[in-house]
Length: 174
Image 1 (tube, rainbow, N blue to C red):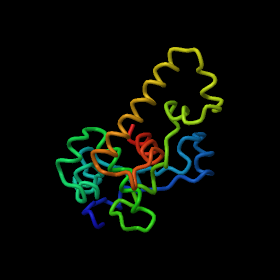
Image 2 (image 1 turned 120 degrees about the horizontal axis):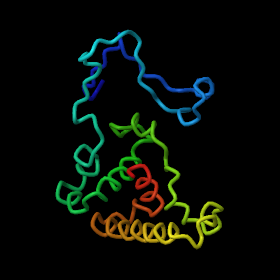
Image 3 (image 1 turned 120 degrees about the vertical axis):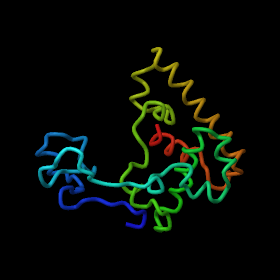
Image 4 (image 1 turned 60 degrees about the vertical axis):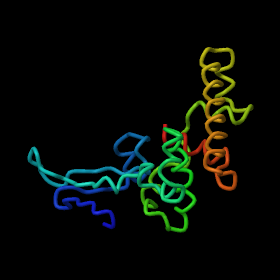
């Protein structure tokens, strides 16, 4: 492929798991996911795939790094990856992202408890009221919002980095 990924298709297959296949496997978590399967007996130490570093989405390979420069993302630390994911997603729909296929495989947002706090009426949030978990999650929500504000300021990103886009990206980076 364009990244130089080499896969021995004689022994390895990559499949999208359909809902019916997930039902057969009795595993709801795999529906809509991709899986790597052996198509033949594989000897130990057989190289199945070679994936160059340039094919892995990181801050170093992101479009954001190219557009803002090395030092800016480095200054954000781990938040830089969240910003890189949010930025890259802007170019996925039109196919101009080199990582469009990768982003098509990951969810828009993971269902994590710290994002239940966006909606005060969320029934899941109500279950946690009065618990120590609620306090921890409220602190995490505040930290996400603080990280977002820092990122917007550092990247001068108020035109594209919304709090929702940041939360979505943070959920899949987590």
